[in-house]
Length: 107
Image (cartoon, rainbow, N blue to C red; front, top):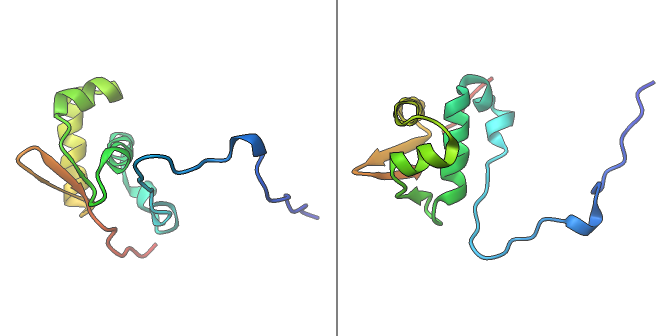
């Protein structure tokens, strides 16, 4: 018989709170299988842009700055960005990156 886990925080003294700016990660990345089709660098870069983007999902970090922060090469940043564009998850123009609303995806 499988025992059901009790819900609730492991450490109730460290509950996350929204302070200052706000970003979110759409749970459909998991439930619609997006993480299954993204490469490691694409996931990392998508989570970066989700975190640093403004309320419209726009970020202006340079490839060099991102590469330094994420410990990737500029080539890996450009390749991952292209993969995310092709999958319809981000838009890119003149150094601006926008995280887009997730397109529908069937598993």
